[in-house]
Amino acid sequence: MQDTFIAEHIVAPASRPGMSRQNPYCVRYTMDGRMVARQGAMVAYRGDLTIRTKGQGVRKLVKRAVTGEGLGLMEVEGHGEIWLADLAKNVFIVAGDGLSIAGKSVLCFDPSLQYEIRLVKGAGMNAGGLFNCRFAGDGSIALTAHGQPMVIPVTSAAPVLVDTDAVIGWTASLEASIHRSEGVKSFVKGGSGEMFQLQLQGEGSVIVQPSEGPLPAAKGKGVADTIGEFLA
Image (cartoon, rainbow, N blue to C red; front, side):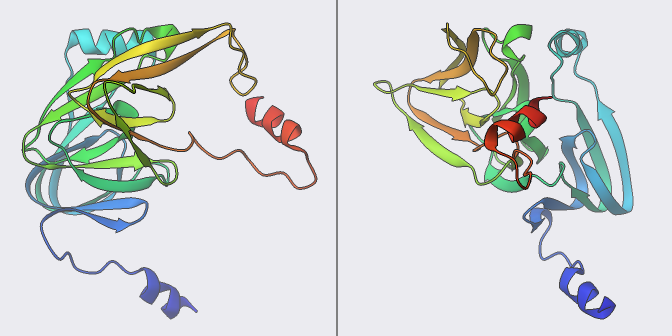
């Protein structure tokens, strides 16, 4: 039994440098230089690697303190391998040029990409403080998602509104802002009398995830009981 388990899950030698999916929930980055990842994403590493926290500047740190959300990054440098994950979320690798990715969905990215951390227009403390990381250049990004993501086209004639918990990223050329729906009571979110969505306008696409996480299953209990426990 032990030999079967090891054979099924053993890590094979890396086939190429850079990032690759180790499995649906973990990225392996084979290094000979440096890379950037979200703080706390390291699962394991081997080789001669140095991990340093990247500063974000006073202004960005203040934003993070006020809104309760941000994008803490670390820089990894050296020769070896590092495995990265975020609470068993699904991971996907995409070309980074021209994308804006919600801070909570960034796992790691190539150092060849230039990036700027921004706060979405209108995303103050009440709207969830939605940070995004805007990328440009030649390189890849590893994203995380709850479940299988969807890519929804956005056009000038048909803007798209997305729940702020569901958004993963969008084409950087799109205009992004926070939209507030007045007088809408959400029994899932507690019902403050208003809900916030990310509004995207222009030409491009948006990547969304089906949920921020599954509701816990409870044998013999109805949906209302299960949701009540989830919100408690």
